Image (cartoon, rainbow over all chains, first blue to last red; front, side, top):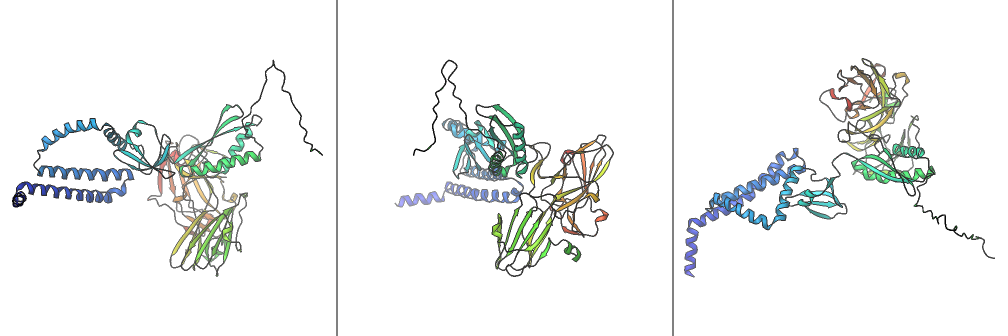
Length: 283
Length: 269
């Protein structure tokens, strides 16, 4: 027991213990300094930047300062940095093979941040997921969907797939697909649609609404009517204009037909037998 | 505000409420009710559906109709709901794109003064120890529009149509619209075809003439010789015939210079 205490006292008095203490203190200072300096930097110049850049600045400065302190701490422990960097190269290859997915996500994350196709606060759509971007991290992008679910999408997926940013431009186009009966006068239909768009204050006057005759459909004349709206009012316009078109068509007796099926027996067959049913009530 | 202007134009200005009183305003298409209760002010408004644009009448009266009966009702809670209600006309918070009912052409070297009217907003505030703004309401719901060379570049504005009258005598007396004299000079060698005009409402202040008509200072739009640039100048003057005037509101956005150079297609279209 006495021997243990003697060894401990010797160790504490040795230079190595002093180096370890200094390294630990350096790392601790590094953590605090990185946090303080990155926060201070954000407060000083962060106001002039958008969320995305501010986040990049904060994380970049944090990790840079931390790495500097870590390197000093290693130096303090007597590591030869050139040897260490060489070993790090070999180590990186080994880790790279072992963690291909993570590395791929990491690199994709760097590209995503540089490309800036969306930033924090934007609403994006990837496949069937639509949501607001909460964070763009090194490995993944975090989304909040409109039904309030937290979705984590790996950066690799984002780089490989089609991403739609819904909040990039201030105005959006709403495409209304509708069908009218074959008997209707298309000029009248067009005029009624124009009047509805004109009366709706959310529908932009310019760019002008677009009327496209799509096809002679199976049961209807298929029309696309596209109107523009301010991005924030898109949903409001979508709800109001469909209702207004329906009301205007009802007022003007324009029919939106249900699918029709005409049953034809062919020229060689006899006509369908028809049975007349009397509606008179029995006595 | 001078007494004669106040008497002529009593839909704006200061209004005293006695006890739990309600007042109703009808200005053009807008109807709004302001009700004072013990600890709150209630403001409700709605727009008339079938409004005749030529109907330029207004009225202010006491009412028993509860403000909650209108579609858009807001409550503002105060510890002490005393004080005077102040109603101030203001210009739009976005530029207004005026489309002449009939597009017209201005040949090379010509200049013309048009009188363009635009719908206004009202600011409802309580004047007690300090002024507290409660709400802003548009007198007419204007349609949104986009003004710019493409759907990527441009700005959101309000859309309006105008007669672009050339003479002051032809102008009807609108109490709920502000008139802006617009001097257009075409210094380019080609004819200027005017289909839409960008009226920079947030940069203009609002004045009232003694007959109650609202005015903004004159703006001058000069199409430069090369045809690609336009000079927009905001004058400090009103037409000589509309004196005396009082200033009702300051511009919403201040610009350092009264002369602005803009791309031609951001002013005319």
